Length: 171
Ligand code: SF4
Ligand code: SF4
Image (cartoon, rainbow, N blue to C red):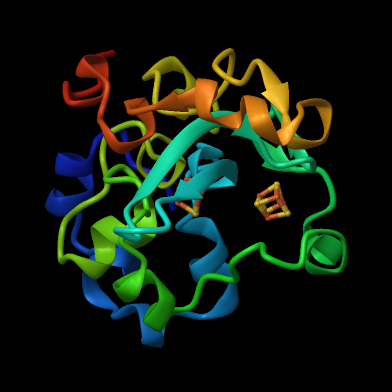
């Protein structure tokens, strides 16, 4: 079921599943649909050896489709990218680097999905229109760049919400 806005969803007689179920209670289809398709978690992250702090880069995982913002081989991703993190309810609650816009993180924190989430808008393009996805912001993939150049690609935008993402959808 899709709604024009999160408010509409709230007003609906049947509250949407992400407001009524815990992450553990969701079935596989509901679980997968919580992903908004932003692609932010598929950016390469760097960990400081001394502090363990994690920083995002704008370098894409080698399997990231930079335009579609999806994995190009999702079913077999872990065979090709062994350190690809498989999200589970437990992982969602413990990973500090999940973007603040991430549908899993929002629900885990007891918050609602934003207007641009495809489950709310009914349109897979709104995550791009809101400037939340990585579309147009990934200049290079990890296998196209020498390791010594990674530091030059550190960015902070993946841990921020763009201004346009906060407003409600208007029709
Ligand atoms: S950050 Fe969250 S919502 Fe975005 S692609 Fe990753 S899992 Fe999906
Ligand atoms: S393997 Fe696929 S899902 Fe995993 S980080 Fe890379 S692009 Fe994303």
